[in-house]
Image (cartoon, rainbow, N blue to C red):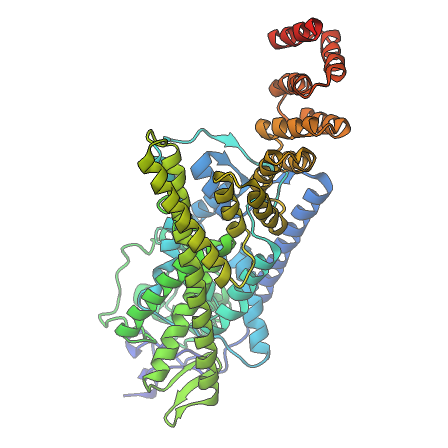
Length: 613
């Protein structure tokens, strides 16, 4: 066989990326190292511009107090559940539609998490670590499953509760910008895990490949896309395209088999087009990947990093870890929320995927197989390496932490399930029966036992735990304990309006109306449209005899509530003052309404009471 008919492969190409001689002509393959993609810098500048726009969006909100709702695709969950048309839902819809024509361009050129992953991969390369992708037979399905949960559960929720299609309403503008986002440290941890940790362990697009639910949606739609990377007859099978692909796509193999890239993981970053020494690759429109037939009779060989048994074990580890950190869909299990109520789905998916792959690496290394991950050989022919032993030790520590978190979650699940069962018994038709009361007492003991156990095991201060104990104490009319527990919960979560409201109720039950009113004042700032919260705050201030605070709350409430409720609040001020014995104050407020021309049966009744007295 002549040299020109041999399999060609240039330095820098990935293993298995060359093409068989039957595909290429006798021309010489362009020699040399893989050149640097011109698209890398262009994409970096585009992603920097995206982040500048994000900063400008936040700055506008800070200055104006109201701005366009977050351009975050997860916001579309609220459109599906509540009918709120927000900027995130519009972005998700337009991005998905664009995939039909240009493929997954959004992922490669506009996603802030891709920018983070590219930055992390670039920094790792600067210190000599080139991210190497790990492959699994089953875990690539995670993004699709995550998408079904994220966008399917709101629909299931409405179906389960017989709510029908939601009534559409605008939610394009927002005052509480961070309302649906996690706190700073949770967000920072998400970026740290999704960036450096996943890139080092799973490859340069580890989060996109094994966690991103939006990628799961785009990956399905991409199969119908007419815009793809396509190849001409000028290809010489050098493999440069596969070598530079950061999306873990075997570009050379795919263009040989199909004449185009059919892998839905292709993010159209154009690096492969940029480095092709023959100019054989280009982005073009044509037939989609769905139904494309291979031009080669040879079976596609995709190397797997793990055996079938380890792969199945990894799936089990992933499912268990996800249940620990993310809980279960509240549509089916409202008692099984995320760890400490703080772990968002994206972070939980990333942690679960990393835990699964770490377990697979440990199992393979312990089985005696020579094995390496990015920049680190775990085992050689001589046994475990020093780096391998350190990796296994750190992995075991992490597995122990996950097991500890599982214990905390177990007790929270059991305690919360019992608390919800109590609520169901209290509203049942037989709530006053002796059997129901005995059942409630038994459930209360279960709540106390498991919530206290979760408190003992928890490494972090979880505000849900004292709040749940406060609920139980209030049910048992132990308002001293209830107030103490709710005070603890509010100190840990000062923006939780419901717990502040329950703290106010407990304090009011103890006769501490002034303290209750101050909690009520904070609540109406957190729940400006909740009329009941305004009424309670006003009542507590009047019963405390703090007229100045009462007037402050009333004025603020009248400014905040909808116009149709303002007269009701003014009448409430009069009624509460009458109830508290402040006849002079009640008469003054009534005269103000009469002078302004208000005619209302309730006002007439108050005037009769004042005249009669």
